[in-house]
Length: 170
Ligand code: S3P
Image (cartoon, rainbow, N blue to C red; front, side, top):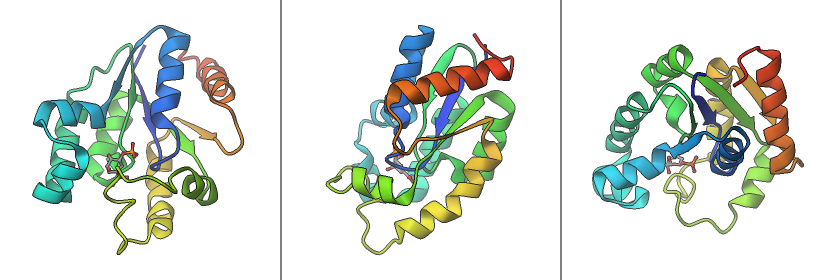
């Protein structure tokens, strides 16, 4: 099977759902943010602070293009869809699942978050950022799952069912 890429805004549950899918399908799970931290030996906030967002985006693309395109579940960073080249690569190489979460729910989940430089940047309007990104997630998505009010189990089951429908099941 092609690898499954979880895409969606910060706080949409990509990492948790990727772990759930990994268990359900007994496939390896990866996380692009985790790979960046390991590969460049810095935390995400340190990379943003010391090198800036554009360097982080370069690292992110380089890591994305090296992910295995078969038999793996991959959680991505919320901004992976910002670059046209990343969107093109995802469309060509993977099955992308967009976890579509409302602003209200994201805001509630990330209220005490201190690890996400973009979320913590007071000069950025995150609600507008979400609105700007939604069409980019949708452009890439093979599957869209609305996550509000659903358990991880419900979301994993919905993705499995949709994969079956697409006849791309594992
Ligand atoms: C980002 C999302 C983060 C991380 C980085 C930038 C973004 O990942 O990649 O802080 O631009 O939305 P999560 O979506 O896992 O929080």
